[in-house]
Amino acid sequence: MAYTHRMNALDPKQRIAALCKHFYTLGWVSGTGGGIAIRDGARAFMAPSGIQKEQLEAEDMFTVDLDGAVLERPNDDRLTLSACSPLFLNAFRLRDAGAVMHSHSQNALLATLKYGSVFRCTHLEMMKGIAGTGYHDVLEVPIIENTAHECDLADSLAEAMVAFPKAHAVLVRRHGVYVWGKDWIQAKTHAECYDYLFGAAVRMKELGVDPERPPL
Ligand code: ZN
Image (cartoon, rainbow, N blue to C red; front, side, top):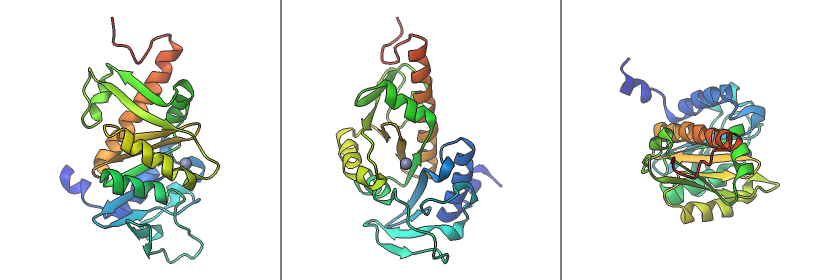
């Protein structure tokens, strides 16, 4: 099957299940953390809360409207809507995202320990994978403070999304990152590039190289 056909071969629920399996292998959604949501017009599809992400199938997904009202739920009564749901909806409403990923990646977490309120780097090739960013730019990602309950992040996440219109991600201190894109393909690309940059910046700091400064 041709590449473009394969990219469109799965419906959004199947795609979420496939991405959860893939991201599990990267350590981004281990321990039932993290999640993915994909929007289709005025509807969004989301993985349930607190379950083994790599075991998910399409039938386990919730369908909600953009206000968060459940339109369709899985047959299994024990499944509950993701605690990330208000945060995913922020990206759909405020940034017109087509897909959002929430990762508990260690690269994201460690980057939040080495920066204040904004992650910054420059002159790194993988920055070009972020829409609207070039090699010579300074890439910025806002960092918000973590809360005891995930749903309480919604307001500060929304503020950060509005304050940093060029960013396609928001880091959460000692927690992880929310990343979005116009569709699942761009969201996945962004998630991979940001994660690479977070990891590289932390390693550069360990080596005594400032990721915020251009090379001499
Ligand atoms: Zn989380």
